[in-house]
Length: 175
Ligand SMILES: [Zn+2]
Ligand SMILES: [Zn+2]
Image 1 (cartoon, helix red, strand yellow):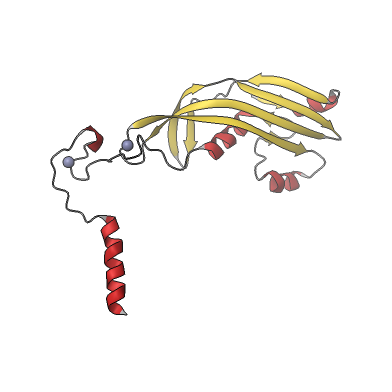
Image 2 (spheres, helix red, strand yellow):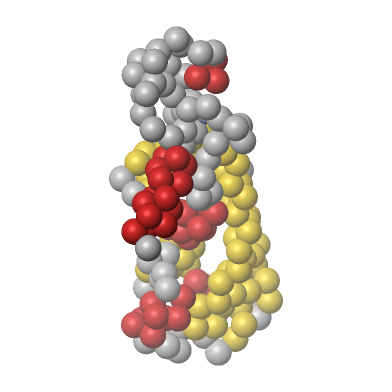
C-alpha cells in the first residue's frame, strides 16, 4: 500500500493517523521463505513537521513460522514492530538513502507501507530460534528429532567442545 506523503505535507502540521494492511503472506530473508501465520493491522502516525519534513510512526505485529535452528521443528515467532523514522524531503534522494540507510520505502513522495514494515520485521528477526533452550537437535544418522526420544543410533562424531580442549592440549605440548 502506498500513502501519499506530499498530500500530508500539504495538510496543516499535526499528526495524521492511517491504517494499512501488510499485504505479503510470506516473509523472505536471505533467500528463505517464512509463512506469516498472523498479522495485525498496521497503524501509522504520520506527522507533518513542516518545511518538507515528515515523521512516520509505524506499529504492527506479525507471527512467523520459523524452524528451530537445531531440530527444524516449526516455531511461532512473534515479531512486534514499533518504530519512528523521519524523512526530510529537502535532502537529495542520495543523502536520504545515506541518512536512513534504507529509503527503499520512500518512492518519490509516497510511503510504501509494505517495504517499511518489511525492513522493520527484518530488524526484529531473532538471531537464533530454538524450540526450547536445551533443544537436543536431530540425529545426524537417521534424522530423528531427539526431543521426541532417543532413536538408538550410534553417533560417534567427536563433541566439538572436546576438539577445543584437544587444541589447547596440542598447543600446550608444542610450547
Ligand atoms: Zn528444536
Ligand atoms: Zn538416529
